[in-house]
Image (cartoon, rainbow, N blue to C red; front, side):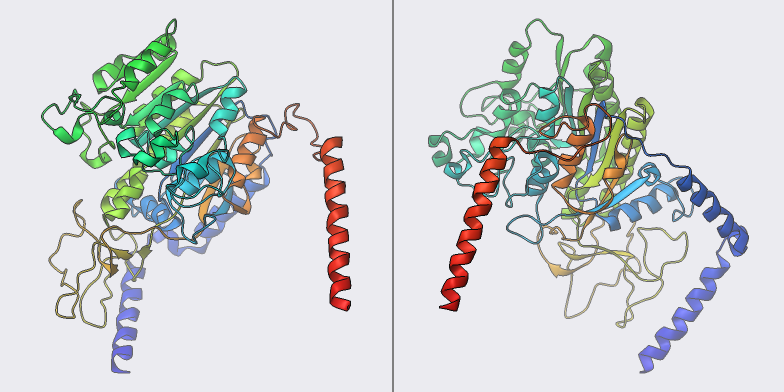
Length: 534
């Protein structure tokens, strides 16, 4: 009871101090009424865009759950010397918002492979598998055969559109891989990563599928070591053996890709100077692999040697948009997730801010009346936003309200992760610890080497043609079907004429099958009923 009274007094003091920090205009009720009235009118004036989407851009923040989204908004404002909470991110301006349920077929909490298969291929599947249905077993090559599913990137290419992938991870990683590959294991980046049994059963690695399965116009990210023969020195890190080529089959996939583009203007680049020299107007194909593995974190990136996600997004759109039939582009902020796995909120939030800047560049280069732009996440992380921090307090700082052990804690913490530090039954005293340092690892409740994912719904934000389809609470695999419908690619082409949308009419053959099936089901139900009665 004594601690409860102390906590209550402390809370009252905090509220009083917090009020003293409020902006004078915010103390006037008319300030809030006026803002609400303006927002209400803008919503009332909104007209539905029912055009066919010529272009589709899917911005995927890997691991960017709603807590990360909110915290990144505050950080973005604070980096601009604002208090942060009231900041409007680019993705905040999207008029239509929904939620997606992220569970996989076999787990409550998914991974990036299962989720990417859902939102790109329109089919939910099992953990760790890519571009295949849930009939495929994790790591079992034989179960993959006949269970492959295609993605919206392929649907768009088949419809004559240009297609591209931009990521801050390796291009063979789970998210981009689901756009073009079919694999019983997300870990089969190159042939050296595959078990012998999978090779005997004729499964192929993800890197080889990158150049074989779909004619992708723009490929930007990392992962060059999976493309070259074992022992091939990396052009940037020639003395680092871990950066050298890994392929055991002797293939040089980069050279193969170049030879496949005979008669076209195709550029392979691995550094920023060559990347900057690529003329989008004179380029048909671009493969840009800037690292042996994943790209550097945004705050550790050397602007003179490594392009930002804003720059790579810009180049991709400039190349793809030359196609009069339009394009599909997947842009992944992939290292948000990897920073969270390391328990480093500083890194994760800065990656999310860079991701939002890339979204702004995408909107700048395209027209809203013809481009459907989607922003979403594949899954979340167990990041908590807690305590009673003052308005404008650093999102990476400490809560002014301490714990019952009379020790401070950070505003952002993890449910589990490498930051679990209990020594002699006590939490560490972080009063003199610089929690705003990029290398700081947030405290976590349970000890694990790598922070897990979390299973709450993720936000889906949309603008452009048919963006109103992305409202409500939906299964994550719905996203692929809604994108395909809006762009008139894939199986559902009812929107192609841009007129009234009739209900789907099954063919006579399928109707006959359905009738027969219904009759059989009715007879079976009748027999079961009779059995129960008897």
